[in-house]
Image 1 (cartoon, rainbow, N blue to C red):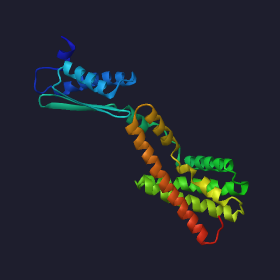
Image 2: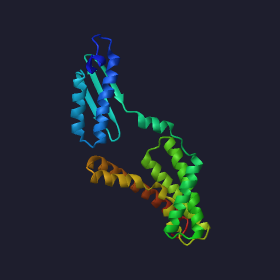
Image 3: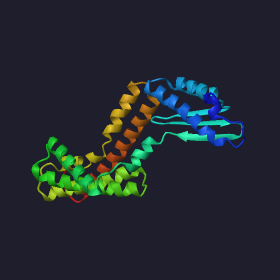
Image 4: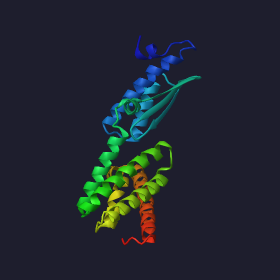
Length: 237
């Protein structure tokens, strides 16, 4: 009995046999993706695998980090996806909210020093960025739009950083406000957008670049609103 006979039997109720067939085709697609094959080649070769095993219908979706295949024999069909990334995301331990907030505050304070924020303004930057991170996590947990979230967090963090630097008699209030919102800069997506474009994925790279640009615009709006508010109360920036 060959592989095809093992995967397909003559009974109409043999729908579950489609699952191992789908897994074989997906394994072939995974190997092709690891070898760097083009999307068209992967689609064609996986379809040949599935049809060679007896499938009548083959539909393959190729994502950035996933493969999904739908195959069918007569009226039966089954969809399989590679769920390893989902499993890792669900099972991997995460740091607590406060640990993340403190780490973000320290990072922004360190960047503030690199931007020539004086020591009296460094503390307010740390506190403002930490609070900004807590607010951002809470807003995202409530499924607030990511762009609106960027504006709100930018406004709150910049105002807190500016006010703190003012009351601490810092000479770098404006720089302290900027340093307080550095947690919102999408650094990794920016690098990945450039890499995707250079490596032959212009559509994905362009989409990421546009998203980065829009986020930066909303962050700038929040910073501008914070500066307007502080200037309204007579704080010289």
